[in-house]
Length: 147
Length: 147
DNA sequence: CTGAGTCAGTTTACTTTTGGAACTGATATT
DNA sequence: AATATCAGTTCCAAAAGTAAACTGACTCAG
Image (cartoon, each protein chain N blue to C red):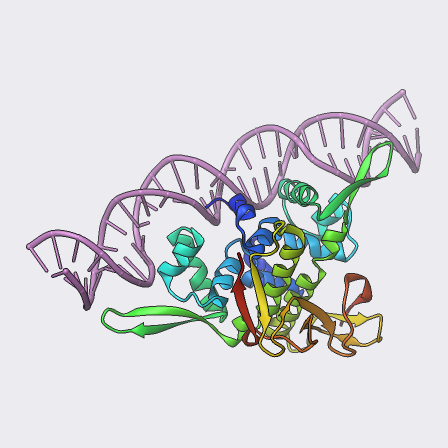
């Protein structure tokens, strides 16, 4: 299977991974959520090769996850910003981050805490059911194939 | 940067990606959550090369995400099962799946629905704050660097 | 006006990873 | 005795990734 074939699978997870499932993409998005927007800033932050960065940014723009827009004329320069579709990936990053905090944090705890503007507290993400609001775990769910 | 250097970054997201952030791993885990356990079954389901599959399964076992255990002697055969650490990745998969459902589903809707055993309804995952229970979006959160 | 600096890429030459197909070995089945 | 099952391993060509140098449009300091 070639990687792009994933996009044509019916599975939504496969389609999602076709867009953001490669080695660099989620790190690029992490930075994007931390307000990194410019080519050289991504490069400095990630130690990614410039060629890969070019390629990944273009792919994310093509997917509609990032938007490339000019921030200065003369010389023309562009920055990369999250679209709505990109912002919608936040729960994915939060979930992964929380898993990392739980299983890989040093003795002195995770290096970054997240504060909820709403209630002012440090928090972690809890996945809940859209219908009843209960907390969800792997064992609480049955998958049902449609059509 | 080499891929393994990620494990030594302080960022929990980087560490998480070092364990499960490559092209095949999340697809393998998807199958694992759908009760696929054996080498040949993973291979048939994924169209992955046998060499890659061997390597990824070993890496996941080394990380403690999967457990390799015999299910038959004579001839000795092993199967791969999710550990607690592996099961804890469920929210990540759910979040990615939901994003895929939202942005890539066909006109006739997503191919798989998820039913919550607790309330009996089809649902999607809603990320909420562990402290106040409110729904979380990218704009509701401030990241704070520690020590 | 000159030379250095900024920014966002491209190009080049090289190394590493991956895919695919064939092979292995222990055992079971016909 | 020949074929099948299962879980890998081995080999080689092709694809993908890296680092470093190069480009081009401009700005700015002296």
